Image 1 (cartoon, rainbow, N blue to C red):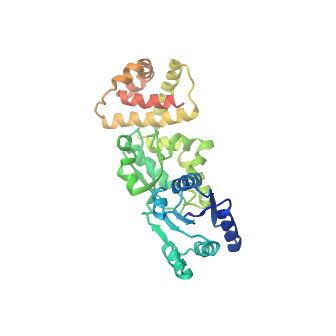
Image 2: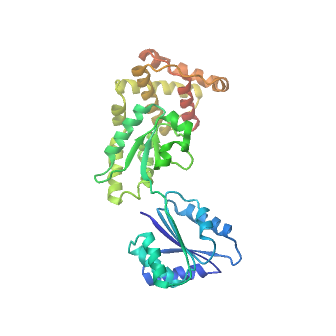
Image 3: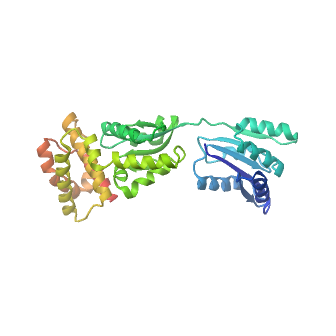
Length: 356
């Protein structure tokens, strides 16, 4: 659990001096410091503190030692979720040493603040804001369908090293797009990232495309979301497992019931034709993403014979040429499997190409 402790005080170097002295006495870097001008108000303090919190990233426990100001006003203004917050006023070097020693020895936050007040018997107060520590979760959601997301979930779980039991959940892509962060999964869980075939563009939630896990040069970035839950050896093993499980050939064999070699060949040929029509070359990342997305789409259409999508008149009118190019390029694939790619799926293909 990441613990962060900050001393915030008015004066040119008051906070810095207290933090430096406490860290030296403790023999460990515990406190950061934020020095504030003498006549600054609480709102300016909160703004500076929020800039600091944005910079350091995810925090599970935040200890704030301040010299003055309304403790309630301070905690209510913080841009921080899913964390326990403890604020104590009238900070001094002895107070910082007491709090720092408790943090170092893993004393529970509430006990630490109570013990500090009992030890000093001075006129200062503290405030605790206990927020529910949500369980971390990886969300699999694919424009290619819930079945694809469920198979990705299984592959990801199989990639975790022994002893790692992170939760992985699936969610219907259309529901994710429609509700965004209002979906109950964001209320109940700490969503580390979304893994899928097309970015749902959820604010403050990182997206990892399947293609990022196929391409060795980019999948290592996936690690940053798990560094709080795995040590270095486990992260290295996770890398190796991802590289194996999410190779294009293994991915196709896992996701596709139809003959994956034949289907992939036909989709690749269609994408070559589409690139000629558009007079552009797709990046490897775009190609891999489209391979998986379209192959899963074709299979879904063949297996379930899903009903018609409602076409988007605006899209048809604004991108008439693109729609025609896709229809012509994929005509052999549609004829071979006896399916028709719906207009809504052409929009997904357009979004891939737009972000090429």
